[in-house]
Length: 272
Ligand code: NDP
Image 1: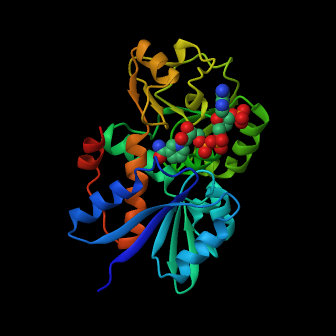
Image 2 (image 1 turned 120 degrees about the vertical axis):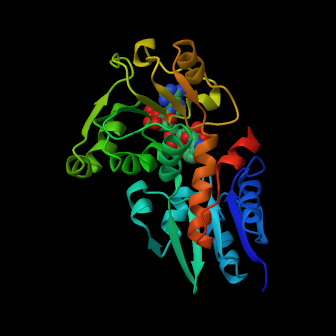
């Protein structure tokens, strides 16, 4: 049997850990796969996808800045992709492009499995209203937290995002709220930073009182200690970066392509 071919498409792409993660998963099952990094021209995403389709690739992961273009390029979308408005996993089947989004599921699985924290009945604060925040909101809501507060620098974006999820929140009996960073004061059980402020090492204008000792402060960024993580650590909260989310979203993509559930814990451990 020929080796199945996969790729991760982005711009830039050199930093991507996806090939290493997928090869680690494949080796758990004695599978041989090819998984490469593909730098797509910024104006050439659809040509890159067409080439993979014609060359018999089975699927591709999509990273910055192409998640919205991957959404547009998909012939079929999962519910997760539709609610996120973005695609991070493509499967190629019989000339069809099937788009899914595993980012939110990756975050939730990391919180539940590796941090052993409940989401059900908890007070959750989500910082940010960009692509990453939009991708995690549905998977968070279906876990039935008591409260999900969204705060964002541009408040109108937070309101627009929350509006789209009001019906789901209601059916899961979740109280949805929007606040400014400055108005946040009470502590939360889980605080998720889905802003990209950490990329520029910028601090968010957050009061220390949002963190209690039992709070899990989760930054979706990985590979560096952000000002958000430093602030939460100083307030004695439990702190996580986004490495577990990265590995868990890859595990869900691996499951979509191979129907196999890899063991994520040793892979997260090896990257630490
Ligand atoms: P977007 O560009 O779509 O959104 C950026 C968000 O950050 C917006 O809400 C924006 O607010 C906010 N923001 C940016 N700079 C600042 C600042 N200085 N102060 C306050 N708010 C700020 O990015 P994404 O949503 O795609 O990505 C967000 C983060 O999530 C990135 O760091 C990315 O690396 C990470 N991520 C991690 C994953 C993982 O697997 N671990 C998966 C996906 C993403 P405004 O609306 O006001 O502009």
